[in-house]
Structures are given as C-alpha cells and as structure tokens.
Length: 141
Image (cartoon, rainbow, N blue to C red; front, top):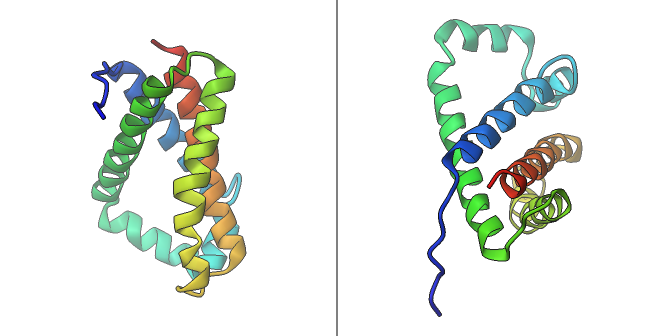
C-alpha cells in the first residue's frame, strides 16, 4: 500500500488549532465547566492561582503544540477520505474522536479511578474541538 502524497493547508491547521485552544479556554473556564472540572479534579481556586503565578506559558505552549499535532493529523485524514463539506468534516471529527479519544481516555475512569463526570467533561471538549477542526479543515482548501 502506498500512502498518497497530500498537501496540507497550514493556515487551516493553524486556524483549527487556534479554535481548539479558544474552545478549551471557554470549556474549562467558570463560564462553562471550569468550576465542576476543578471540583472533580480535586483542585481549588488557590491551586489555579498558584499555577498562574508560576507561569502557565510553558503549559499553554505545550498544549498548543499538542493541538497542532492532532489537527495536522486530522488534516491528513480529511485529505485521505476527500472530506470537502461541513457534514463530512463533522463526521470525520466524530469518528476520530470516537475511535481514538473517547476509547483511550476511558482508562482514566477504569484504571485511574477518576469520576465519570470528569471523563465526560474532558472527552466532550475533545469532541467539540475535533468536530470544529474537521469542519474548518474540510471547507478551507
């Protein structure tokens, strides 16, 4: 089998990465699920403030890099299947999430003893991120 040679739209990848980071900032803020996430994670406001004082730039940079890699790989899947509209971007984002994120992250509940609600908050963020990224990548050629 030969893997097809594809071109990746790096502007679309950067836009989808930025969208993922923005979704994450909102998702884990007090506006949406931040307070619940802190409680379920065993963290409090002092822990978060302490992390902010230490400097979270490195953590955000690593998170950005991780999101970039995920979106870059998703761009390859988009190209491989020929997804070129909103519906196919949503569908591919969903299937990547179902096959790789929801299943692997289940270990946090099964083996790490984390609450199912924490799992749901985390994996549904990834679902929204992958679906939005899939749409951006599918329509921005």
